[in-house]
Image (spheres, chains in turn blue, brown, red):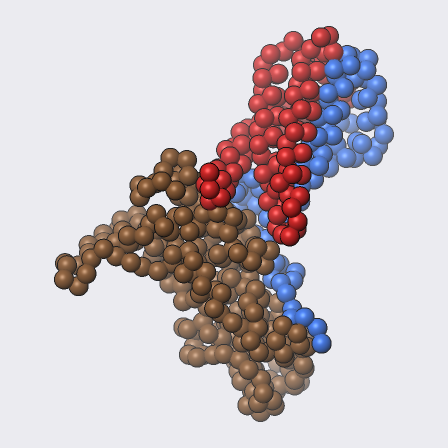
Length: 119
Length: 243
Length: 116
């Protein structure tokens, strides 16, 4: 005896749900990160030397990797967000698969550009 | 084509129960409804399920097949079978009466809750209402008007699962088509009904409804229309009055 | 304000702030790609932002848009994931305050360079 089945991954295995999931997860992670990001930047209130000291923390590779992840998350969330705005405010042309493709390419491009410019 | 029997797991019970496996001989052009019917007629007469037209017009035979809500009469086994296995369960998000039959009352109550029904100002003694077929409202209504209330979209929606009060894609789609019915006199009640956290703004554009609708209706479009309408009404007031 | 009007206004506010953020984020990404070339020091950052009113105004608008956009989104997620809980709104308010205070402090700090 068990409980009746509920919606599982099979119900959600389509492109538009995946787009929603990426948008939600990237948004949630960004919401967690932004206060820390602002906290770091507010160290500039300590003047150039104090700021430099706290920026030094970010030299550890885990921070560098984290920064890269955040740029990619930002790109994903931006691409997905524009898609939602077009769906909700633009003329109806389906669930805008094209915008999902643009978002993926944009996120990859941002990830690569960050690696290129950072080192 | 394989000649081994299909291994079909079918939900037996109600909210509590279990999957029972049946062996069903394969046939060419077999639909999932054929399979369920075979089980009930030849293997286990205690199986409860719903169907009516069996030709894809009424929507009564909607069930969850391999995790996805479908019309079983329009689902060919060959298209969705996994090896030689099938899993058949009742529609999600609705209480189970028995086995594959769900209680559709909450689905239709929400339709009413969204003011998804028509009420006009004229009577049989008045002249026919004139609705311009090429008008924008009529075109918008046309896009969503073919809904037969099968429940597939409702069963596929994660927001319905997460928010028990959420009116759901079918009710909101119907409300939208009626918002575009120039003869209807309940528009203010309707936009009030579809606002709130059980209404259109709870939709996250996951798109399962539009993806799964067997009639190709896109409730996501209707809900987007309602979102704009309700937001405008909340800020500036609507042409029918203040929200 | 009844619940329906509130939900509609929150939705609208989140979408309007999203439009503002769309522009801000695009500009910010370009600035970031430009700024990280050859590493990033406090000197370099402050060299660009200190006394720069345009920078300060742009980023304060950015902060205000985040302050509106993120808490509404987080509130929705919490309300759906924990329907019986009552922390969704308080936690979102906390996030809103953090974004507003820390963000404005960051903008102010970068504008003044610590020289108050």
